[in-house]
Length: 84
Image 1 (tube, rainbow, N blue to C red):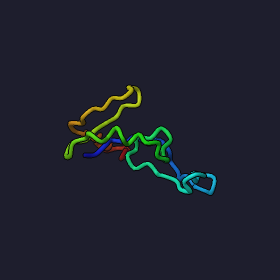
Image 2: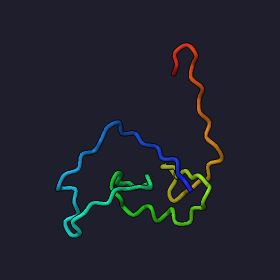
Image 3: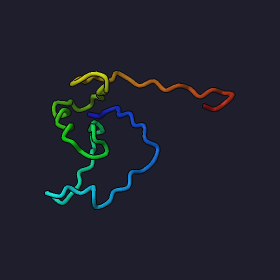
Image 4: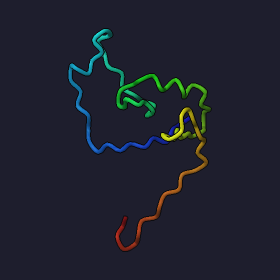
């Protein structure tokens, strides 16, 4: 299984002591890409438990509790004049 994750940030997030969970003494980093508190884990990864191997998924932001299978991704060819 895999996921298409759309990220908008263009720089790093620096962590300091205030990011640590006072009760647990740690910080959990999101690895599924779905957390509303990204880059911190909020437990949203639980929605991925029923994902199937060899299937790519997309979780649209505008639809609550939705998951779509991705058939294929099409990349735009670069413009021959601009290279973009």
